Length: 276
Image 1 (cartoon, rainbow, N blue to C red):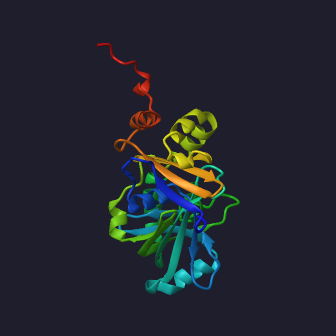
Image 2 (image 1 turned 90 degrees about the vertical axis):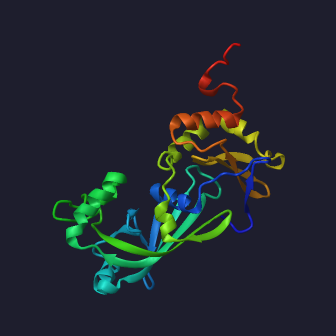
Image 3 (image 1 turned 120 degrees about the horizontal axis):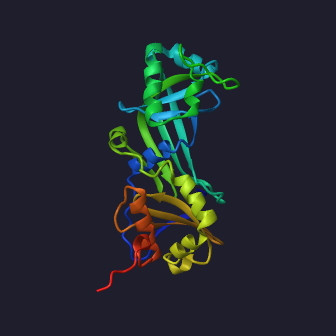
């Protein structure tokens, strides 16, 4: 997202239907992208686990033996101010790979030892993550060779997302009310497969772009229940274009039909037209 070089467009003649800001943030977090925890006076620390809880706080892992965890433990009920930055990377090697940045600010607190195991189980049920095995409890030991981690909680008081369209803040209530996109965790695999094995589909979708954008290199950028996003890497910079589906979809069958319609395929799912 280089200043002045990234531009977003809507397909000509189409009403853009897109995820809400809260949905985009939930999806970015659900994909488990790279995240860094920043606390004043310390080097940013990577956080392989950052899971939104039902109460609006984030469960985060930090190195158990590091200075950061010592500060959190020492702060007691006061907690310490921190910002979690989540980076949503494109699943393809684009010349500008960052699709969006999310900043979640608030205060960090320890998780009581008796609450760690139940919380880990709850997180693993909805978002299995091998990094959870690095959290030491009475029953879970860090995997050999991994750095033992502690589970902490970030009570969120501010949420901001920035992408090629600009920056926007939302309330924690809006974030909790939203759900991740149903295809969020599968998006990377699907787009990589689309790029490597179905270039003809990308070319057909590129025919829907505004005429001035058909001369650059067109790459799959994003996929959600509302439509497909394409990145055009052109001589004058990068351009992001959303091609909306006729209506939102919720499963693989609906997604397949919606993409065929965008391509202009006359027979959905390969069915022949019925004779009259």
